[in-house]
Every structure is written in structure tokens, then in C-alpha cells.
Amino acid sequence: MPHEGPVNKAMFLDEVEIVAIAGRGGDGCVAFRREKHVPRGGPSGGDGGDGGSVLLRADSSYTTLQHLAGRHHWRAGDGAGGEGKGCHGRSGRDLLVRVPAGTIVRDADLGITLKDLTAEGEEVCVAEGGRGGRGNAAFKSPTNQAPRHAEPGGPGRQRRLRLELKLIADVGIIGLPNAGKSTLLSRLSKARPKIADYPFTTLHPCLGIVEMGGWRRFVMADLPGLIAGAHAGAGLGDAFLRHVERTRVLLHLVDLCPLEGDPAAGYRVIRRELRAYSRALAAKPELVVGNKMDLTGAAERLDRLRTKLKVPVVGISAVTGQGLGELAERIWRMLQEADAPSARPAKRGAAP
Image 1 (cartoon, rainbow, N blue to C red):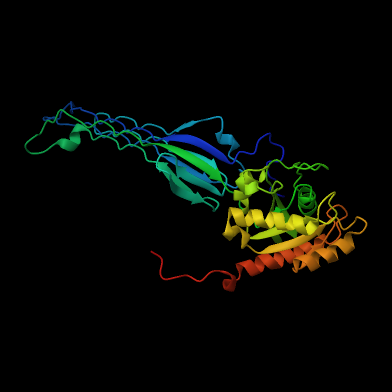
Image 2 (cartoon, helix red, strand yellow):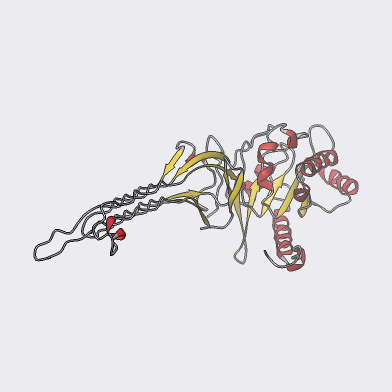
């Protein structure tokens, strides 16, 4: 079943700030033995329990940070105090906060990155629970056989966190508004993004799983349309360019029959925005795809586009399905090549 993105949600939330508060440790107990047939008593106060910690774990069942938006403070359980007869207090319950895979966890006050949760099940402790105080039994010694003091529990750590989500997908679909990105995703997967004949129909990224024969599959992301100046905040592209950084392959969709402008010029606009945002992003493997081959004159425009760009361009029609099978196979081959050892940068020296 496809992993559908947050297409039906009113908001795609990819940044949120929360406060993680660990539990306080329980106080140690001051107590003495008072038992029948025990000729001598003694200190018997137990230790307090440790406070619970706050942990964040990557969970692929979440695709946005929306579930964290309505709750600012996330608090773990406090440790229970110690009791007499050497009974130790119960430790506080840890609080596990689940976030989408691809979430970067940062300390908002120190400005440092604590963890980049990229793998399913990966977790990080963001706030450690306070240590439980020792009871008076722990202070017994030959020179102090009846101690009358115990330790208070330690405070739990409190941390202000900034969470930033960068979607993890194998293929990122980029292109100008109305190039047909959402239609292509809906034809290759079972995702159902909003599709309309006006620009900026897609207001948030959408994920879909492309199923192929032989148990082959890959994750494709439809990113909102970029425009000139997106890296500087124009349009919607600036808010979502970070999601393209995680992709292994870029699928650059070009409208072969735009209402105005030249397809080659539109392609170059997007390339400039990628380079302005990140040279590493612009260096990713790219497959150029010309869409709307079902329209009159599209074949001639495809040939001109290939001549102007001097790169291979695949012609498809996302509406009729023309060329989609070949496109999926080419994407798969590119993903396999991207995973090949020769495609990976050589390691420089030993790991620190």
C-alpha cells in the first residue's frame, strides 16, 4: 500500500519548537527499623527513583510534525520518593515522542544539532531525568550509625528544541508550476495530490511509493513548484527546497507546451535556483523529462529541447500514460547507479 503524504491535511508542518522537560528524581527517605524481636534498629530509608527522560524516535508512520503543534511542553514522569524498610522509589516513566524519519533535532538555545533522525527506529535522548536522592541507609558508617539526613532528588533537564523536517525520498520531482508534477505522481503511485489547471496547486510536498515488478519500489516526492527567486523567498519554493536535499535523484519535469515562454528557458530557471540554494543539491543526478507529449506539436518541441539543452530528455504524457513504464525503469537504473560503490565519494582517512 502506498505511503501517501499529507495531501488531505490543512497544513504541512515541517518546523516546530517544543520544550522537553525530564522528570525530577525522587527524594531519599529518612527512616529507622522498628521491628519486633530485632534488638537493634538502624537506618532503613530507601533511595528515591530516577526521573524519566524525554526521547525522540523516528517513526515512518508520521509524515509531518503536525501532531506536535498543539502541545508545547513535553514532560516525562517524576521519580517516586524512597520509603522505609529499604524500599527504593519507583523510577519515573520515560516519555517517547515519535517524529517522522528525516527530522533534525536542534537545541534552540545553544544552536547545535543533537541528532539527525534519518533511519526508522533511530532515537535520541534530548532531556535526561534527574537522579534519585539517596536515603539515610546509604550514609551509615562506623562513625555515624544513625544518620538522620537523606539526599533530595535531582532536577530533570529542561531543553528547548527546534525540530526541522527534511523529507526522505529516493526521487524528488522538481519543475515550474503547472508542469504536471502532481499528475505524474498520481499516475506512478497511488498518492492522490490535488490536481488543477492553475499554478501553485500543490501547497505542500506529497509522497508516493512507486511499485514495480520484481518487488522493486522507490519513494517519490512531489515538491511545490519553483519560480525565479525561490532561493531568496519568492513563491513557495524557498520553504520546501530543503526537502529536495534528501533525495538521491532529481526528476526535472518540463512542460513542453507552456502557455508562454520557452521550455528550455524554464529549465534553466530551475537549475539556477538549485545552484543558488546549494551546489551539492545542483550536483545530484538528474533526469530531464518532457511532459504533455499528447498535445499537438509536442514531438517537435521535444527535439528542440534536446538540441538546446544538449542532454537526454525523456518524453512522456502524464495524462495518457505514454512513456511512464520506460520512465520508471530509467529512474530505477539511476537509483541503482547512485548506490554503486563507484558513485560514492571516497573516504578520506579513518573515522575520528
